[in-house]
Image (cartoon, rainbow, N blue to C red; front, side, top):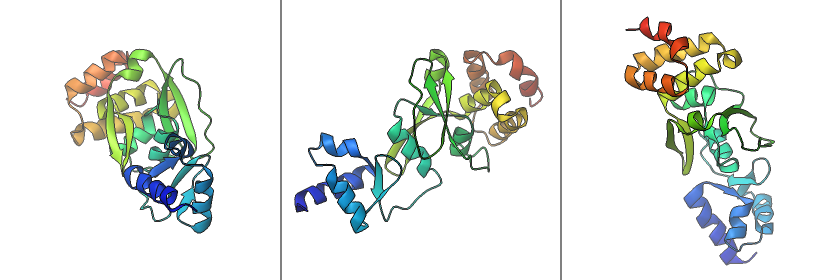
Length: 200
């Protein structure tokens, strides 16, 4: 194996933590080097086209970072966003992502992904950037996440939504103004009003 290609791959890993096969193409490195490094035990392959260092210190959010790499136009939402904001103790079996109404539904073999379509206004509102290791992910703010839980209460359960609202308020993850603003943007004010008024 050409030493310079190997060193360049390892240098890329230090910067990004997760590599896609296409990252090598853009650097002019043949993709075949990935397979060789996997065989040597230097790299691990996770699903189609995603690689990371064998000595990677995995976090609870590793699957979120992988999805962010594979579907860069998505935003982490609902149960997965609750996890990021520490508003739940449960680990979702799927990574919940928001995509725009016109985006193609992604096909990902691993990790399991649940995609939800948002209107343009709701899709763009409340997006934050967080770092998972060296990978940047997009996730909705705590206030927007709570409101989304009410909007999709038929999918995740009203009990999850109300608990998220209580925890968000008690842990001061969002102000009442931030919650009201997100509720207005997502047209959830009427649904959420009795729950929010009961807390003040």
